[in-house]
Image (cartoon, rainbow, N blue to C red; front, top):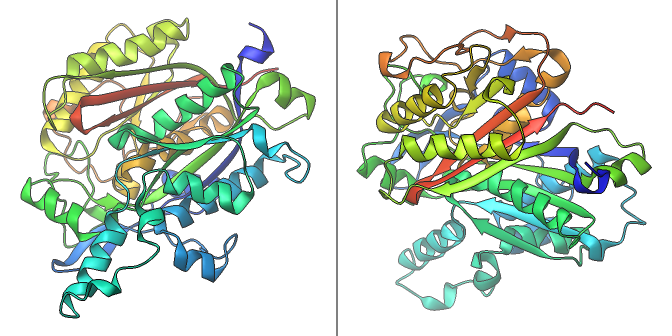
Length: 412
């Protein structure tokens, strides 16, 4: 294939509840260090949540942070870190040929809730409503805040794709590069979910909100005693380029994107359809021109809910029944569910496997649910398997959106 039609990852910027760069994030995944803690949620008291602890002012002034959003601050941090990591000469690059594509779950809830709360503390005085409300709550805000911060004049938008958002943002960036719309794509996913009480209340109403006296053990996907989702925030942005351009500047290349698929269940608002998930994974594998047995690692979406974990495990078993060499792991035991950031973050945590040959474990399984058994599941301890060439990353969301993204170890 022509190098202009091959898309590679040359920079990674992230913040997660257990790390603010790829090196620390990876180390904590291998060592089963959780970033989930107890935190005070308005009206609801102490709840488990994964909050990020990055420097909001590393790339942003306090004045602009006050005007912007938490999601925007996460996006700005990740995008700047990704560009720095990529080695791009940002001063000379044509900013009109840079695009920003971020997958999101929801946006604007934090600001809206806060402003309504302030009104209710002050006799519903509508004059307290912020003049910055509109630009804060429009759905393109997180991506737009990046363009303002980094002087990017190319296209920007967010992709509302629920918890499939991280994968979807990367796929969109790849497609825009292939179309020639941009020369550099800043692509991934972000979430500010635990900054609002509404999402906690909604998952509690569904009986799907995780709880545990030890917050680091609250998120336990596939465990027989799992009891729901530990809500988290975070972000991960990749620098994507055509291979031809990356070669010209002798860029470091983390991985090559070789397969992708997005489909819909069309069956239920929240309960997943394992048949559609199988179809999504198989479509991505076919598009990559691979065999089932070529996939070395599958990172499961694995949220920690009852039906979600069972259905996805069934899908992975069915999709890879012809392969005895495919390993499986998951990430949400370490960081909780980072919603729109989940797919991009979880992929990033596995990319170092290309170099060290180690699969990071899923954590917090004390008794594996028999309905969640799958061959070659890596849990509680890292597994060295040697050569890792292909990783398939699952990311699924409400309203039945499924995504699968396949990346390959780059070899010159």
